[in-house]
Length: 423
Image (cartoon, rainbow, N blue to C red; front, side, top):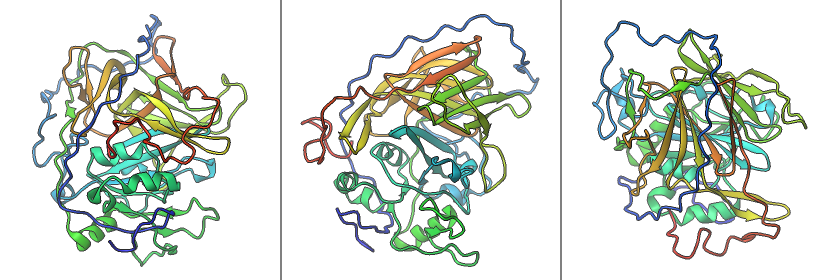
């Protein structure tokens, strides 16, 4: 393995193996979901087009997708070579606020946002059908990231991690470990020089590390070769399913100083993202600005917003450190927003570790709108409210403070004596 990886946090660079390992998953107990909120009947100022006179396809997926269709977006791909590779999974920061606007996030097919620690949330973005010449700032890994890079059999790009997490990652097997890309040495970003990770010296901060997904794919190809993974799980259809209610905005508050909002835009028929500009001691006060991509100058947008209620528990909790295990196994409550409507749903994670599926109340796989999907991950302790019948507010609440240190050295089995590393 080039560069090596060490349990003391030493960095390394590595390419891929040629096959995924076989492992057995033990689903975590399903959290008791909160009751679905009941929207009130309020006059709607928006006009949502439901019929446009154009025939719509029945859909594609979830078990298989035509070779020219991106299985993560349901969209036609003109450059089929982009699908003949593993996805690039990149950890991206969102705090402090001077890291915004980030670079390249509008090019990601799928993005997960989740609570990390001490009031901060971060992104982990999956790039497959499109490339971005500059992505970041790239930051450190956490336990939840394993779910994402496993689901998509991805190359995971991150800025190292706490020694306890690195130690855990090292036990995941050679295919996973060889799929990590970290910084071996600090290299300045230069217009005419391609490297897998570089530092933008114009940014006076440690939040200045970036990657280039196209060059990263070339690097992986040169090192050990690449392959097209099997990525079943998502179903897509232009046709709006039945059973929805108006869902014109989605508020996600992770803490007093990190919160965001998605607003449905009738003109583009997508949800546009707005990010907080200031934190208030009063949780009822909010201030937003459009959240844009520095690479394109465009406001971040998504065709599907999925809120996932997932079990959260402490992995480490001491006076100085907080790490949370987010157990994306089994199933749980979800809300799907597409085309200005919200649909009650459930998420299910296949026992073989595949891509999370969203199920309608009747048990069928929910049809995503073709395009970009963002997952907002919240805890089983979170509050859900509906305002004016059309605006959905999700307030994240962390696990209860145990009051005593939890697993300070991470030397015991982190998730119970029967847990198999890598699940």
